Amino acid sequence: MRDKYHIASLAPTAEFASAVVEMLREAATWTADRGFPTWCGESFTVAEQLGLAEAGELVGGFDAGRLVASMRLQRTDRIHWSNDPPGEALYVHKLVVRRCAAGTGWPRRLLDWAMTRVAEQQAQFLRLDTFPFGPLPALYEQHGFLRVGSEPDFIAGRWIVRMEKPSNFRTHIV
Image 1 (cartoon, one colour):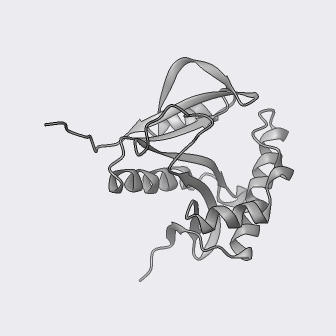
Image 2 (tube, one colour):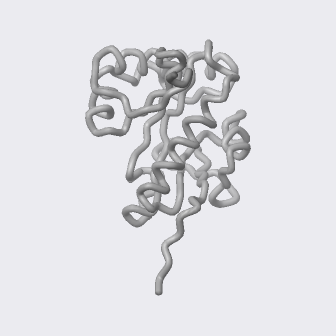
């Protein structure tokens, strides 16, 4: 019997890319309507999502076969974590859950899946950046992420808080 919930890298298909764009735009509208705008929904394109899927960086969460959540999991972040040594961390971006699946545990499932990839690649951290205002920093703290630095950073034209979750894997120098 197959599990109801499934997480996997998304195949580079127009169907998946379109669904991710739809989710990102839905989330952008929802957060803006509640006073903590996260993204400009119109900035997301199917071509961009296809490129991410082709690079193996687009992850999907499925509930009974339907795509209900997504995130980008990348090996580098040259904008928000530009001083990181290669291989030290994996980076989560654009974690999104359809409103119809809100409250069903998708952030934890996706972040746990990402932590497994961190351990497999023998990296030390799972890192992300998020807006310092609104509920998102607290959401990530509930999932074991720690803030890096005591104050928000102004990077690439916006305020962010950088957060990381240590892996159980540690490099041992003998």
